[in-house]
Length: 60
Figure (cartoon, rainbow, N blue to C red):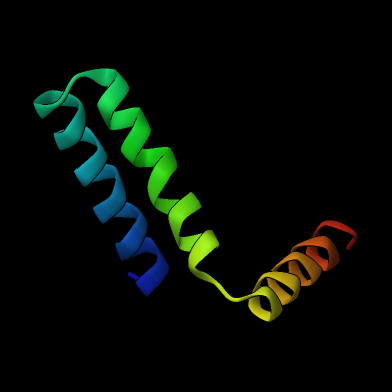
């Protein structure tokens, strides 16, 4: 199992636990808020590079 698959499986497990333990709106807030906070934590050069790579892969 690759590292990305392990991370995805862990994310699904944590998401299911959060849905059982917290109300649905709180789990949704966490699921959307963590990636948004991680993106905002990047400095502007890293954000530009991330956007450029994403656009390149879409245009393939």
